[in-house]
Image (cartoon, rainbow, N blue to C red; front, side, top):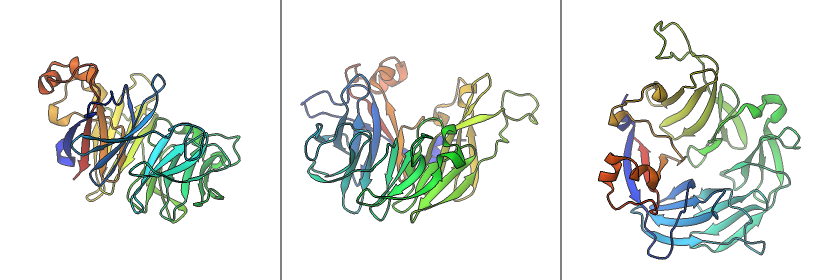
Length: 322
């Protein structure tokens, strides 16, 4: 199958406006609001940073409210967007959930009682949170109101063994009213109106292209790296037995068609069929980071981007589902 049949793709070259080297390492999360990219960068070795760019890669501003004072965050865990109020929402696992305007002005902060590793904004202003710990009182998937008060447990850790979830991509905004959750084992859930329901039950009858007998099916697997838009659902299957092949799976909702990319078993794939490993998604946009080192070390990419050096910013690839 052809990736270009499912996506329109654009490349964004990030510019700093001459003030500083911007993303110093890795990009952790990307959201988009109108024509503005909100990028969370940094990692274990570098300070995390929240910066805004226009859709052409021009630097707009940096939001730096790190600290322990009023309106400040201790850690930039994840980010979300409130498209109605046009707020950037910062998830600080050690402090709470903070709102900022697009200009970086502090708006509000709520605290919640227990630890969580992922979050997403609900349409009513509350949040859904994910805690993959069995000892936490609210382990599993749970919700709070707009003031941080616990509301209810959607999926308990004990009932659904959410420790079986691997990889990134737990919670994702499908649209303004529905959130997707990569649940344990074979399930993907949708969250709407403070309730959760099973959206997809994924069966494991996927053929391994290395097998001469096509009747042989894949061994047990982990489901990971889940992303979903109104048009498209994507996730990876990782085989748990050698060889550790990956299968990237795309499900087109409109026609019910499923495409399988056995990318690790095919070292040579036509350019148009190369399967992106997405970093994040927001609504119909799927994001991929292309590091400057990978460009410099690849003759074809180096010829395409001759001005890129190892000190350059990463490139952002925007895949929009058709």
